[in-house]
Image (cartoon, rainbow, N blue to C red; front, side, top):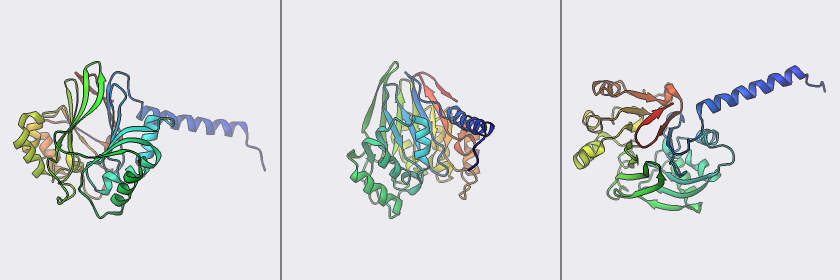
Length: 288
């Protein structure tokens, strides 16, 4: 066998270093004393990683397949194999499919979900993996508040706004968990795939209390969500769309982008930006 020449070996090392540089550039780790929220690029699906200032780690949804495992491993590093909480907003494959690999490869403290189910094989596999995991399983309801620890600006909390009743009989998107993440004076509203009917319900129930700095738009920017009244009530400083590049659904729909424009709401889209990283000191939110 011919020996590898030194220049070839050097070239390979340079390529590997450049590849790792790209990983570091796109996914620098959470910052000490700050709330970090990362809208992960998992293609046509949702996955949101949260690390509170105290170090509590939460993963909301996991995209459709094992791609989230690779992204999360790059974000956290090889030796961090613990998650305090996984929250599955609803039973659709593009939200729970990737959680199967996460549960099998990470030690998970708590799994938060609802009683709503799907016939999809990915959901059945997720439910089996969750049942076999030693994690505590919580079927959540409106009013549940999850304490993610304290930081310089006070406590970090994840408050459930919907569902407020047993959603077993609901269509899966309609059953989506809607939650507000709060650190100090900063707030993120996370909506899963909740349709406009649920948005209108929450507007009628909560009104201006829905106002948030960051809104994760429902259903990947589909016209079934992000109604004009909801956007006008939430009044986010920025909207986040989690969608796959050139996806077959046409997400985000132009009607939604038009409504964002009408309300003067700028947006970021994972299909264009890749992983979207934000940090908050409890008073301001920065994106990088």
